[in-house]
Each structure stands twice: as C-alpha cells, then as structure tokens.
Length: 535
Image: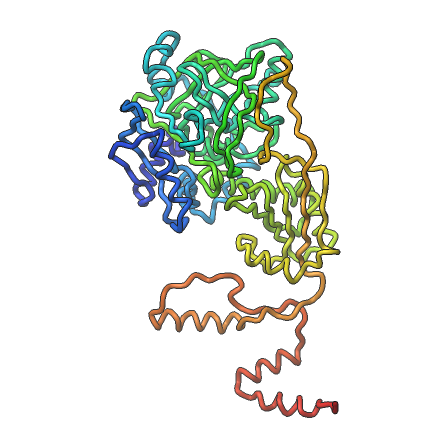
C-alpha cells in the first residue's frame, strides 16, 4: 500500500509549488556564508509569512572543496506556513492534528529495505581522505564563534536496554573526526538515561543519527513527550499511518526507511569529552562542556542525498518555530488534563529572544482567583527550566501580543497581592555558565542546582471593569468596509479593535450611549441637569 506522508524530497517539491522554496545555484561557502544568509530572514523586518526554505545546490568549504550533495536549510519550520506544508494540512488544522497524534499514536512498521540504505560506507571506507563524516557538507552555524561544524537537524535513535522502548531526540553533534561525532544533551534527557543504563549493565550503547527523514520525524523528535512514549509512534499519529522503518547495518536499531542519511555507531559509556562552544537557542554561545561522543561504525544514505540543517541560535529561528506548536499544545494538555484546570484555554510560550522557555502566558476563561494561582504554580513544574515569568490573563487578552499582556498586567494586577516569587527552580538550558577548565577527578556527576526562581503574575480580572474604550464591534466593522472602499492601505486588525463590556456597565449607561448614536443626546443632558448638586 503506498504511503501518504511525504519524504523530504516530496516536501521540497510541495514547498516549491507554493513559492516557499528558494534554490541557490551559485557557490556558497558552508563555513562562512550559508547560515548567515538564512539568518537575515529572522534578524530583519521581513514578515514571518515571507520566510522561505533554501536549497543550496553548489556547496563549497573554505579550502575550496566542492561537495557532491546539496544542503537544505529552513525547509521544515522557517514559518508556520512551511510547517503546515510539512504536516500536509492547513495552518488552522495544526493543533487538531497534534492533538490526534498525541492521543492516538500509530506504531511504525518494518520494511526490508529503503532508499536510506542505497549507499553503505563501512570500515576503511570511513577512514579514507574525504570519506566518513568528511563527505557530508555540515555547515558552521555561528561563524566566528562555533569551533566546528555541528549537525543540528539530527535525530538520535537509541533504545532503553531494559524495556527496549525507543527514544528519538534532536541533539546537536560536533564533527570531531571522520569517524567521531559529539552529542550534546542535558542531564535528565532520555538519551542520557539510556547511556547510564548501558554503563551500569556494562553493555555497548548503540545509537543511530538520522538526518533528513520525513518532516513528521523532525516534528515529533523535537517535542517533549513522556519517557517511554515512542516518538516514531507520535510521527505515525501525525501521518495517520505507520512510519516505515528499516534495520540498521551495524547496530541493533531501526531508522526511517525514507531518510536521506543515517550515521550508525557506539557511544562511549566510559569517557566523556569536551564539546562546544556552540551558538544555542537561549541566544548565547553555549560553553564547552563534557559530553558523550560516538565512534561511527557505518554511514548509509541515498545515492543523491540531500543534507538537512536547522537554523537555531537566537530566536525566532527554525528550531523555535518547529518546537512552538507542539510545546504550546502539550503545556495546555498538562494544565487542562493532568492538573485538571478546565478554565485554561490556551498557553503561549513567548518566542522572540526568550526561546519559548522563559516567558509563559496562560489564557483562562472566567477563572476563579484560586484557579489562576493553581495554574501558575502548576506551570512551574511542567518541565525543567521552563517558566521564569508566568502570567495568567483573561480570554479577552491576546497572549500572542505582549502589548495586550502588559495592558493586563498594568491594570488588572496589584503587585503586592498578585505577584509571587517561587524559589527552588532549575535554571535549565540558559546562561550564566561555568566554563570547562579541566577535570580534577575521573568521574563526572551531573547536577542541576535549584538556584533559580519564577515570577508568577496573576493578571486576571478580580472585579468588574468599565468597558474597553473603543467603538462597539458593529461600528468598527462598518468603518473597516468604508476604509476598504476608500482604497486606503490594507490593514490587519490588532486586538482589541472594538469595545466590549467588562462588567462595570449598566442599562442606564447603555441607553445613554444608544441615545447618542441616534443624535438624541440632549435627552441625557436634560436628565443630568435634574441631578445637579450645589457646591
């Protein structure tokens, strides 16, 4: 039965048909030019809707080498429009598609062969000049600061040695040699748990690094699903059918059959090596740290492989767009379903510069004050390092618009009553850092100190307020039609764009406003004259 989900090539074709792919045929240096060129999409006034995916067809390096393979960047999530093409659905259907995938995952199915193993490199072929990892055109992400090319859109496939349950996580990989690649991951991540279990059992820790799988693989791999949940089953849920997998050649793992590239190997359980620095999504260079590394045992790929890279670092970026849709939804599910606060209607994790994790806005529908505090306190425990500034707002406040959120904080929050600071939080993936200065002992223990805190702001209405001081909706809509008829510049509505009641308004005031519309305001004037008092 033919599959209906797109592989990377079909996805690129779909982008091109929609005008969302830009092909670059001139020579581009992967070490100095490639990522900086894409960066201008995110560090300029270019509207999000005008961002594109790029396919570089003539890739070179600083030594003048020409690579056999093109490089695709920004093709998975430079914008919600591109992300929606990858999910093969309209933008407005993305939350529903994720909800279905998380609720109804579909396990992958095994096939005997796939295009990802059209070319196989083993043993001495990996060590030859220009072979091994050298043949892959991995870009330098932050030229001038990164100390090597790093894989970024790289999904590491591993298994729990006890349960056999697969984990797929997206971690960067420092190219250290033709047969060696680093793997940065944080304490508590599932990759690290598998490594520790293998070390305790004294067995090899096998891994497979997948690059350029079907878009749904990347979309599932970057999300924070619970331990024991197979990300490839979530990918199947996104596809609505099983993802096809093939067995690796040198390790006991399965990988997507339609991927572009797979790097197989064994991760050391005996040693860690310094890795980094690397420009990270918290907007700063992540310093050198001790991290795992993998000795490569095989590289398999398609005959005409396309190398796939994320652009990350300062947000917004492709790596933040690709996470945001799923993160927002899973945070919402946590508060509504796991904690049981039904008045929560939306969670917005702020993206520009703050990298989703630090500023969280929780939108609620007619919550009690106690519910608002429950939501804020529960949100601090959603995930390590997530939530430094958390705000609850009413349903009339647009959580995507920080002007709107600040409006709520300014008038609906009394700081000495409506703000709390919660101590004992973990800083998570963020500066400041302790730079690596060498080892004093042979053993390394990871610990995340609870030395941060969270600012909780309850900015919901605690009592009735007067109406918002804008014309009522029907008058603003009529004015918008006139605006268009006059041929004035096209406008996008910015919430709030019409006035509405917030409880402190009665029938008498409503009648007076109606009289003013009719031109009968003198009636109100006469009434008010009868209510005059002497001073």
